[in-house]
Amino acid sequence: MIQETLTEARQKMDKAIEVTQEQFGTVRTGRANPALFSNLTVDYYGAPTPLQQLASFQVPEARTILITPYDRGSLGDIESALRNSDLGANPANDGNIIRIVLPQLTEERRKEYVKLVKTNAEDGKVSIRNIRRKAKDSLERMSKDGEVGEDEADRGIKELDDVTKAKTDEIDRLLAAKEAELLEV
Image (cartoon, rainbow, N blue to C red; front, side, top):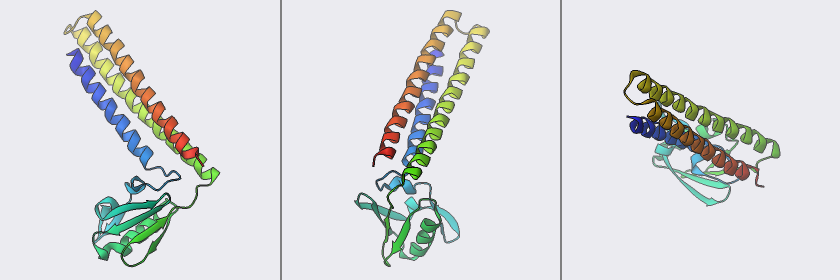
C-alpha cells in the first residue's frame, strides 16, 4: 500500500515536471522554435483550432519560422491569429506560406521572460508540494487506521520527502538552464 501511494505520487510529480517543461517551451528565447505556437489557436471555420493542427513548421534559420498551412484557405486566418498574438512577431504572407522573422529580444523583454519562467517554475514546485501533502496525508491515514505500522509509514514519508526534494531540484535545474538560454545574447 505504501509503495502504491509513493509510485502514484512519483508519477504525478513527473507529470508536473512535464507540464512545467511545456510551459518553458512556450517562452520565446533568441531562437525560433515551433513550440512557441503550441498555445496559439486559430478561428478555423468558426471553431477555435490549435495552430499545430492546421500547419507544418520549418526553422530554416535561427530566428525565422516558415508556417505552411495544410489548407491554403486558412492562410488569412492563421496570419491574423499570429498578428493578434503576444509573440511580437510580424508575419509575412506570400500566398503559400507564412514567414515569421522573430525580432531580437531586448534586455527588458528578456528580464520579463525570466520572471515569467520563474513563476512557471514556482507553480510547478507548488504542484509537487501539493502532491506530497496528499500522499503524506494518505500514509498518515493508513498508519492511523492500522493498515500499516507506524514505522513503515514514517519510512514511507521519509522516502516521499526524498522524492519531493529530487523533483523540486529537477525543476530548479530546468529553470537555471532556461534562464541561461533566455539571458544568452
